[in-house]
Length: 84
Length: 371
Image 1 (tube, rainbow over the protein chains, first blue to last red):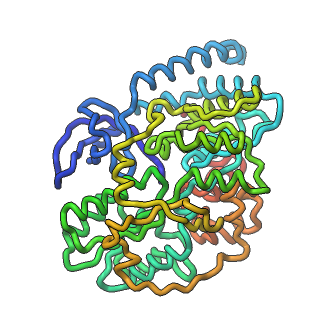
Image 2 (cartoon, rainbow over the protein chains, first blue to last red; image 1 turned 90 degrees about the vertical axis):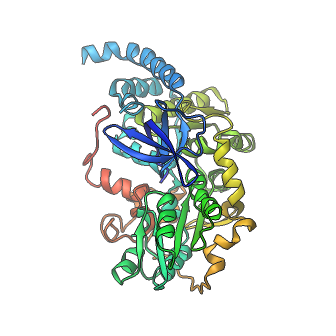
Image 3 (tube, chains in turn green, yellow; image 1 turned 30 degrees about the vertical axis):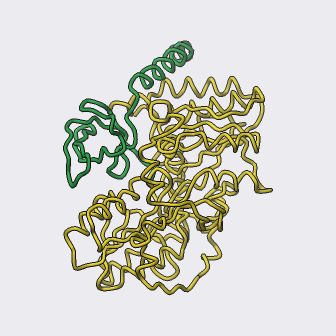
């Protein structure tokens, strides 16, 4: 139930007085409410849960976490993987 | 997909598992709260990547599983009224009530419609002005703002034919109840990343203080969960206890304040019954007084007969992390996703369903990290 999927905002419009966006998930585009992420702009990644964006993904944080993980992880794992 | 694939990288997962093993000198019992996290752990076999001393037990974070039997019975009774359209998340349809389920009610002619979003309930209410639309609004804090929007928007649009049958649960009071239990074995918690996306993680600080356990907010992908386990193990091995945030790409300390605002306007905190567990004080949400006219409990006169769970079902113990699904004598024999005895076998997030899909035959159906 708490599943939320990251997607990229491709357009923004108003519908029934609500701020809505079209959000692309891989090859699929779906409408989602942007009411809870007033800061989200076209091109941003948002996490969508039951048709509502609940956060704008912090791309910088994501990149930094990933790099950190990769640096520590892959360096440490290099030897076992090579020998395996 | 961006922000998904990189968190399923098997090299990083294996490196993290090795680092966890290097840090582990003692046995530790950790609990992931959210059923979505349970499914990632089972699906990718993350528990089998971990050293033997680390035991993962599964928490009560499956909204479908903890929705009270009485609420399901009410939903079925409402759905069977000719004037009612009952709108529900798909997971709820096969959850057993006392005598029936929504799927069977639908087969008997009830107008039960499956919605992916509360927006659907609004749309159905707009397009069926002569019918009474009841939205079965269940979930944790992640879903509460979206469900709240159904009532908030209905009020704004002046829609008179939409009401909510609410069963909302909150995570921190449930963790408190687990920790206060004499049977508790859990020494560290992975807090649910999407609940915390909405709520932030300030409210977990008092749990750490009162019970001296580390809590790490974790994401939902294999790399997220392994990193969260590593952060917990480091704290436990060093004798530290604090709240940490692994899921920084989505969770901030304060959470989504706009979503919280809508939630606070539409809902108020109340005592809540959890199926299989019982009533936990101040652990749920109900519609606030300003939204009483959208409360299905007020609009419809609902008579209730309370009933017991099947004696063989041990879902209460499974939901509290005291038993594993495979400890149940009915598991995969008299209880299957097609014919469930209890809710955790139905939901896509229930621990019993996770074990059924990924562990019924050792190794069957499991997905390798990075595939």
